[in-house]
Image 1 (cartoon, helix red, strand yellow):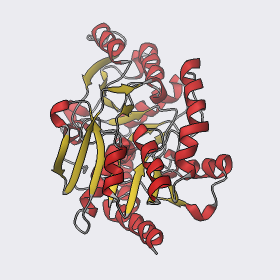
Image 2 (cartoon, helix red, strand yellow; image 1 turned 120 degrees about the horizontal axis):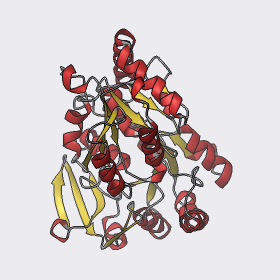
Image 3 (cartoon, helix red, strand yellow; image 1 turned 180 degrees about the horizontal axis):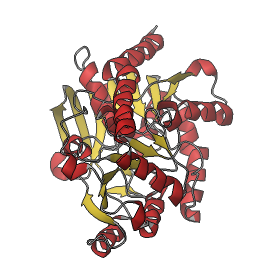
Amino acid sequence: MSHVCPFLDEQMGGTERYVANIIKVQSKHYDVHVYTTTCKLQKVGTTEWNGATVHRFYSPMVLWNINPIAFIFRSLIESNPDILHVHSHLYTTSNQAALMKKIKRSKVLLQLHGGVGPPPFRTSWTRLAAKQFYDASLGKFTIKNSDIVASVSKSDLDYVARQLSIPEHRLRYLPNAVDTDVFKPRVRKESSCDKTLLYVGDLEPWKGVGLLMKWIRQWKSADGDGVRIRFVGQGSYLPELRKMQEDHHKGTNGMSVEVLGPKHHSEIPGIMNEAAALVFTSYWEGMPTVILEAMSSGVPVISTPVGAVPDVISNMETGLLIDRSLESFQEAVTFILNDVSATQRIRQNARAAVEQRFSLAKAGRALQEVYSDMCS
């Protein structure tokens, strides 16, 4: 069993966290290999990690902070796995796996984790043109040449079926997964977290960080003095956020900003449990892993209804769904901070929903069914 993903244990986005979680399950039963990249020469090579054999290839550059440029094709050809499980179609690593399928006739499962179709937000014409060109060329080639196309989002599967005419028998829904033993409710120190909001993710336009910064600047102190918002992540907005941290260090408009920058994923459970709520304002998602991690931790989520988020968050029951207005955001924050009994109910419901639908065991069983279909 072999996985191909862009990063692993370095830049731990949702795709990488899914792979890290699922190999914990698979390595108990299979000989699991992971083909990934690294920007650090000292990490190039083969190591053991989470029970799997990880092959890291040097990437001298990363395009737009998400796409590592690395050559893994030769090693994929030599490995000749029974099933090649490729994660997302957006990467040069994915494109090389699809090319291997054409040459070696290997079984390829492509699992999408978002990023399908044109960006649903304003971006530069160069990025828009590049995405459109990629989708019509390498992206289309990668999707079309996979035996099975799976996704953590049913809406992404609908898009692929419509736009690329992928037949239904080649499409599968695979639930995202979270380690509920790692992300779990803990004893909360209310004095330190009762007014702390948290953002975790890439600090990029498509994540809605610009909108969140606008809301912070317009925040009205009467709606909640002493509210703090912490940012964890890296990306193009990091310098501007650090400047905002300096401007808001005294909480002059009722909200202070704290920028923690990039953190190793092992630190996230502790940071998560110091928050009154997770704020998620993205424009473009599949099924965001960080939302499941927050829900599993019993931390209420305030999110825009993007991607598959409405499939897991029932408004006012397992989280709060908001529109892209300051008023909607402030109402949700005020509700979470002031209605203790309702917030506690949301915490409990959210944890139960994740345990029922997005546990590692459930995700592992669903994936095993797809593997069995591919091999039969």
